[in-house]
Length: 389
Image (tube, rainbow, N blue to C red; front, side, top):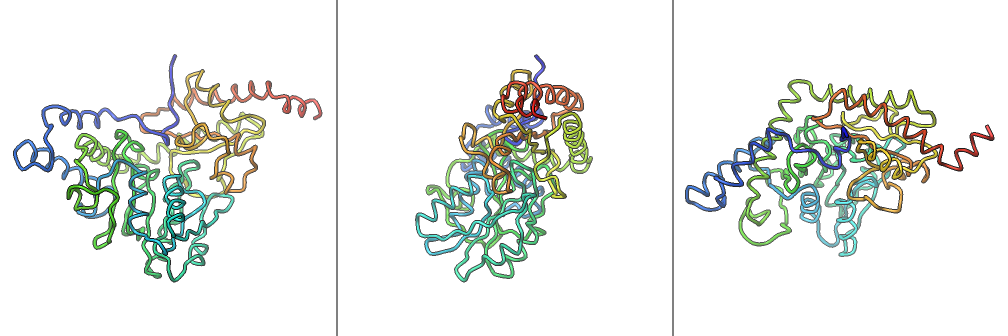
């Protein structure tokens, strides 16, 4: 069976060029990057080359890059490392759980947290952030791109608010990195987190941008790795892979790959809506989005049933965040946007990657409408509505 993967916001396949770049660091170049002999210095050089590449992707200095195990660690380090009991944090109601759960934990240790709302498009109003500021506000943490809807937040405006208030600003850019150009100076953030496996590097590696002179309390204690901000022997193969993925992302921007992906996404979205009634795009009212993501509701079906049905036909999609798989509650993101619970449960996320082709879109456009029709035929409520109409 031909299998099509449209769940790239959950994780991406490692690109062949990335795999080739990291392969030598599992074998011949095995040294500890902290060792001063030749084996160690060869891997140290590879780590620093990768640091240079990630810094170019984010528009910062290499010394401002800290390598981590991924987005969750980066978010935890950024938030917990910049706050202390008695401080106040501002975040949004649609953040990834890596941010929300960290904030919940900090509330238990004596921090105050304000969760600003979003509108029906899934956008944070910067004025809500400004109004939430207090004398003891230490940090604003607002994501750059939402993992479920793909909506891009007005982070540059929020960065200006943070700078005016002399408050640290963190943005979770895990779902933005590699999809849209990032310039940390234009955003005005002090800390920014990314994850390798969302941009065609392997799982288990990420990076945190930390602006020069930002005092960040570490989560881990041990050696003086990563300028004493992240103790632990470096994951050299993963770091090399992340550096190569960053290079490929920059080359893709130069070729216009993001525009090509946006065209694929729009054709998929428009093709589905043209064939399926009582369906619509969540956040399709002028909100800016990353080019690879659309989130569509299909009334009268259960989203998880559709995911399973499509998987049996060879198409991988999702109902939302992979870390929430199996959750009984509907998406907190869609509920925060004002969707009814039943509509939130009937929503499907389609997310493209660099490996997807026009043929993949064609197959999805053939499978999705027939699957929706079949599931609706099995729905007693839908059949009853059809009879009454």
